[in-house]
Image (tube, rainbow, N blue to C red; front, side, top):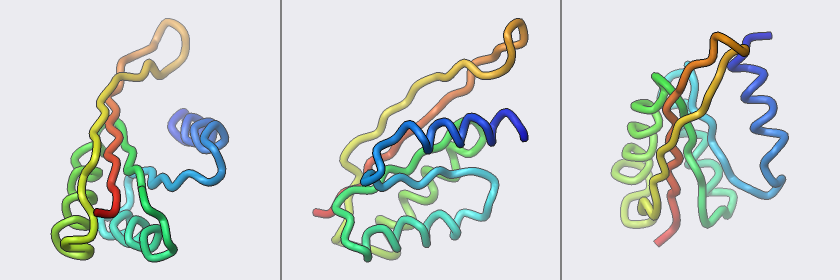
Length: 106
């Protein structure tokens, strides 16, 4: 199992069960847009779009497509958090940028 997959597993296990989070990775952007729209259609008031590294631009694209194309005048960006995570084995650690975009119903 890759380091990213292990980290993703740990992150999923650490978050509360009721929280609506879309983790952005290597799949096409529309997969994440659909996942986010489904969360809202199932009654979620807030959805967090999370990404790190090269997937950050895809997370921003996802949030914008949801807000401007699919759920116009229904959803807005409430908060954006950026940060850095240390990943890798001891001695070969490196910093990876992260982003969390909070989308909420108006």
